[in-house]
Amino acid sequence: MQQNGDGKFSFKFENTGKEPLIIQNVRSSCGCTIAKRPTAPILPGESSEINVKYDTRRIGRFHKNITVTSNADNKSVVLHIKGEVVAKPKEEVPVKKVNKGFTPVAG
Image (cartoon, rainbow, N blue to C red; front, top):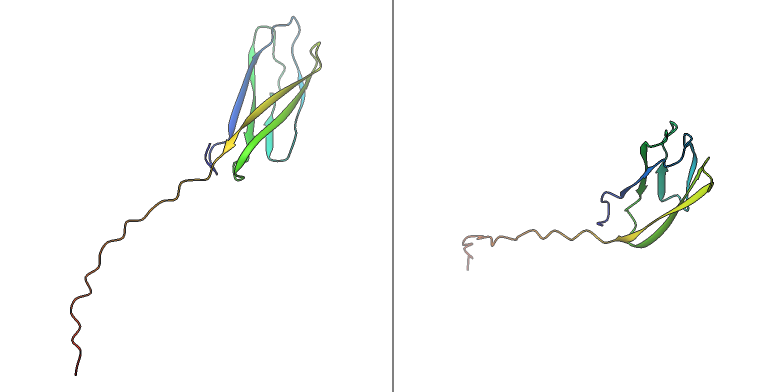
């Protein structure tokens, strides 16, 4: 993805259990990654998503973790995002030839 680009990811999931699923917390491995959890319980058979935004101002490869804590049997799950932020291509401005005209020189 490009520097200063859209660093959004979405993790979709379905509650396959028999009880409402409550996402209690989402925690990212650094401040450059922000995760938002659903606040309402996810009923059995329903789907939801966890939205993640990575700060794309930094150039280079990244691999970040988001730990999701819930009331499910496996209390926590770790989500991974990885990729590379590349510099924006430099824009070239065409230069036009300028005719400065004739300047007489006195002599």
